[in-house]
Picture 1: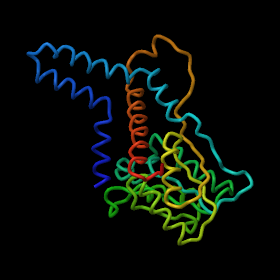
Picture 2 (picture 1 turned 60 degrees about the vertical axis):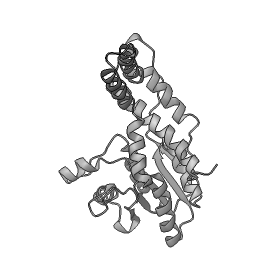
Picture 3 (picture 1 turned 180 degrees about the horizontal axis):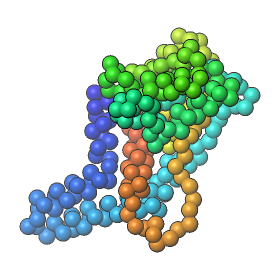
Picture 4 (picture 1 turned 180 degrees about the vertical axis):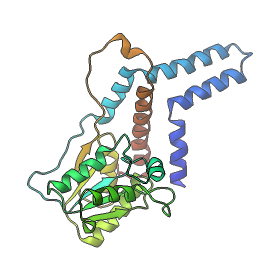
Length: 254
């Protein structure tokens, strides 16, 4: 139930959805004085969240203060690489591992193993239909092609969200007796992920990747609407709301 509610929640956290709702209200109440204001508000919402300064500000808010705690003197029992770095739909279509916008997660896992920083790679990345190939399967196939021994790759392919990532990974960690763990996910996602894993009883060091915030010179062109900025604004709003929801539900502690 939580999974279904979270997907519905995601839909209503998108500025594009807000704009459509406002336009729909303007059509329904087209004979009322408020209709032009509702239509203007729809356009304003789209412009606001499609402007790069707004997307940059939201991204800075989401990533502020997030730092790696990976210890240089430790060879970790496992790196826990969370899902989100692979496009499962495209991967099923081509039969290859197609990286998505957060593909840095998958790449960093391989780099850590190749550099001898971790002994195992735990891929926690399921999907709504575990009977079909999921992200963890495609990531494992890529790692094997790159030379990672099959025995060093452990799959957790049932989780559909961050809370399930933590609960299911905790079970595997206990079964294998791993003690030193390194959590790998996007910088924006790290606060919620780290808190969820600690709530599940795991002591983890963290390695945030896929940083989105970067300073750039301001120009008038930055105020023009851009689809990439709208996508980023939407992603940040969902992540910030997710932190609040997880805290309220007790999934990340107080």
